[in-house]
Length: 81
Image (cartoon, rainbow, N blue to C red):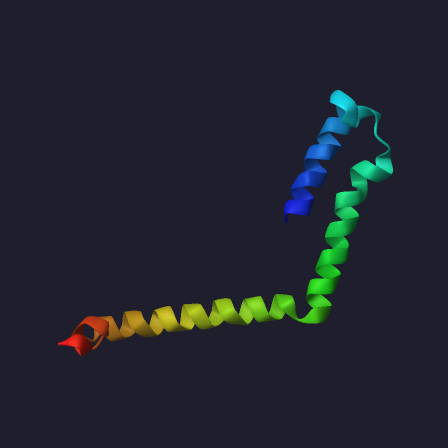
């Protein structure tokens, strides 16, 4: 995501001809967008995106389980007594 942010900033600087970025080549200004596409392609093909999604799902599931146990009075605090 940070590559997209850098790309947007560089694009705005190029369009407004602000500072030295205004004189840079368009290839250099648009390069972060291409790098972001390459990153996303690699992350999807390597399974990184799916692993992160599964980890978030497991964390949510565990939080729901803990909340349900607390509501039943069988949570972490009750087990310590």
